[in-house]
Amino acid sequence: MNPQTSTPNKTVALVTGANRGIGLEVTRQLAQAGMTVILGSRDPAKGEAAAASMMQAGLEVLPQPLDVTDPGTIQRVAQTVEQRFGHLDVLVNNAGILYDTWQQASNADLAVVQEAWDTNTLGPWRMAQAFLPLLKRSPHGRIVNVSSGAGALSSMGAGTPAYSTSKAALNAFTRLLAAELQGTGILVNAVCPGWVATDMGGSGGRPVADGAASVVWAATLPDDGPTGGFFRDGKPLDW
Image 1: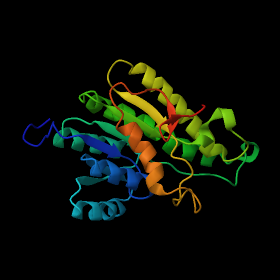
Image 2 (image 1 turned 90 degrees about the horizontal axis):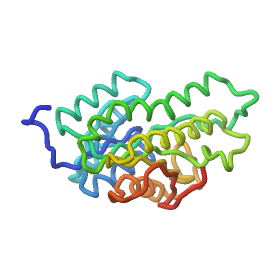
Image 3 (image 1 turned 90 degrees about the vertical axis):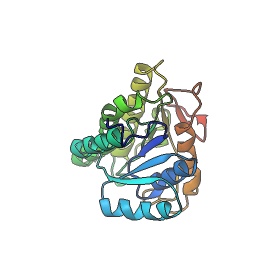
Image 4 (image 1 turned 120 degrees about the vertical axis):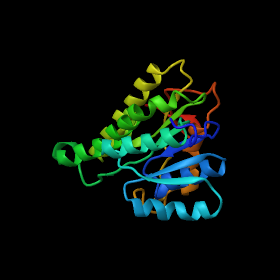
């Protein structure tokens, strides 16, 4: 850490898949709450464009190229956070893909399933491993895994096998990591933002701001807040 460039008193958040949809709105809401937010985006140009209007409004948003399937980009962002801030307070694992309504388990293309798992499950896992050293330097570390009711075993049906299994596994990872970090001050939770009107969710869903607020709730929990849970709008969901 370079003490000349670090700002240890800043509350710093990192949001993956943040150039559009829920991730963009989570970034906006966290920045409006006074945080410095790193906006992660696979496409650097889209990330910079997404950040521009917020930066012009006086919000502290730092766009960074970030592909959660690429350990190299993850490490580069981790080094940037280390050098500029020396710590991380909030990690929002939002990047997600492939709501595969056209498939069922019996005929699923396993290459599609593997692609979904690589982003939706292993992506957050890679991010957590890379950023835990920085989160452990925060007195109020928070990890939010943006999940889905589609990953709940209690209500799982026959559709979207790649997406549903990847989100169920993300929920399992949430439980494992929360239990491991019990007592460290880092709270780890999964959040379903609900059916939201985004590019993935399609029209007819709830407003993006409402879905994002559900994620922001978990990102800003008090120190005595829950860990290892699955929530929507601050209320527990069945696994």
